[in-house]
Length: 461
Picture (cartoon, helix red, strand yellow):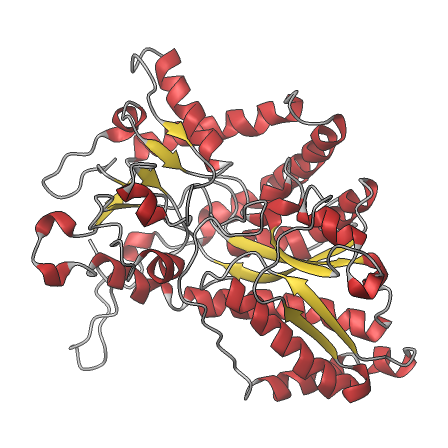
């Protein structure tokens, strides 16, 4: 999981800030959107061009550049549909400014507004969904561990999945923000796929001739983890369960959420700050954890890369806009802002997903050239029995959070609403989800090209 520190810096600095633009495709899509919204446009009041500056929270490959692409796409489509006089432009601040003093969170800063709203905060911001609310935002950002995957959660967010089919999950999100007095409009703009679940100094599952230490062994290591919530809470509870059940005598692992110095995970390992961490997808990992002067996960000792990403089956990130700025947009502009965001969730997910296999292969072969076996990256699967323990800990975490005294009464109440809405949605659809898929082991197995020379399979183990 990638998140931002309070000062606006990402937990990991550096990496490649790549900006990809598919401009040749946009005019055609813009024309289609314009036709689709023709009735709205003809009836709408005249639109005035608006240039909205937004604060971003990260430059990792699957997120920061994708937010910039959203701005490019919206500008081109709004210009196509509404003309120069009605274009909407979202431009990210460079460099990323700190949250101004006097605001506790980025949501507060956007609620106060920036130059367009006559405030001292920001007019808009691209944020991690967990920034929406510390109690329940993670459900809208990365879901719950062992929970719905991307296509399943899209049904929750955009489908009439809440209140007996009368509202969408995003309708519920906006109602919760309004009910807590947040002066913002929130909508998703970027999607990404499953993450890896940790670079560790020892394998949890078996790795070739190296026996896995299992969850019990992991819990007893004297390791400091950079493993962000809710995964941190689940792993911590799973270890406590092993202690409580008499399986292990003591839990030794501990957690930190931010790093001293530059924020580089690799440097933090070399300095002894951490011995285990998760970051994000293979695409993000390769862009942020490799090619650094201090080395890479393999050369510093954290060479065992674990899957599946049980803690995070997707990542959806959001744009939030000050309501006063939002009200400056015409109905047609508002419709385009939302619809282009919905389109970009899909297209960004597609662009991110289509690179993951190649990037995972690059990670696993990154150190092959040095001929040092101890530096090689190794793919490790969590044992199924340990995944079951983590699932049980997830259930405990989710249920006890409803009555967590560390949360405010309103946050507990709102968290309960979101959790129950998601539970009801999963309950009504899980029977189908269980039977719809071909077993993964059979997918593409034995497939070859018409000449029988090229295999469709990719075997990375």
